[in-house]
Length: 183
Length: 183
DNA sequence: CCCGAATGAGACGCCAGTGTCTCATTCGGG
DNA sequence: CCCGAATGAGACACTGGCGTCTCATTCGGG
Image (cartoon, rainbow over all chains, first blue to last red; front, side):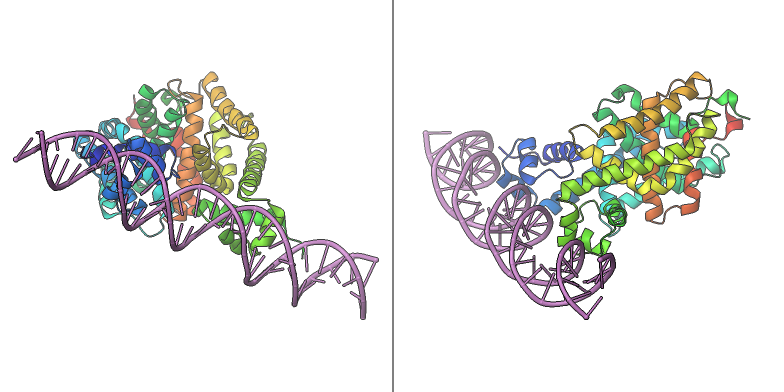
């Protein structure tokens, strides 16, 4: 019988990404368990959201580990990073939206991951690969925004799922302009 | 005495952008009126949000009129568009987030504006200014995402307000890479 | 100056969602 | 096979927010 905590978290993440206002009852139903059982594992909605944060942070952290943003050409590192992040895009979209809400500062784990991503963009600037007029903080912010936009666009069928990694990384790196046209 | 409906809408937009879950009471207080008066002007929360949508759509529409996206060089048109949109960024961020929520299709007026923006990107592609591997729909989506990210980043003090227009349009058009480095 | 319209404050009733509890049922290891 | 642990369904009280209403007050045009 024993409920798989991770499976519940994944179901909750999937639902809350699409519908941030879903009730505990809906979350329980989605996870295929009873509301009482949900409460036995997460003392309340806040606890669930916090666990979800940790779950997302852990998955994002593992994605970053896999992407190795500290290694090799910075642009390639960004491409790897986006590709590795993509499976977690839904959770990131949820957490990113959530972070706008709770004014009381973010999770420390999140800050650590944030610093890692910002570091990649800074490295790219120092190595001369990235332009200097776009700050690492803004590039990081833009990455989150694009990943979240991509997740939503895919969810609503406005963009094909298999294209999204390419769409995000190419736009982030190269922008909309055709290269030949530029000075 | 007579309450200024537009002033109320602007106050509500400002608050709801920062705190989408704000109660009717908070909205009324922020607008400097009583909750009863708020209910006299907007029959309920739904009506308020709908009015806010129309308000945002109208302002975005006027911003687009001012930007004249149909005229001149496509890249310059994008820059003009972002610059003109920037004062409405907060409202766009709110509506963009809201649109993820209400699954029941979007407002028609919004679709019209959306088509106008998508049309600019399509024109840019046809004129050879924009690359073809990023679809107009995705570029439009990315524009919303970047504008929203920018609004939040400014609100949280992570990016300076006066830089944001440049940050958004330059990233959207040129990406993070330094041009000289590219083939 | 005066009267009517609009406002602000507050009191309801109502409802959805939450958190807690109970109890019958089911699963699974010993 | 059997017993304990875990589950699901539901009842219950409680809370926050919503929408309606009343009433005293205030504003402003005639």
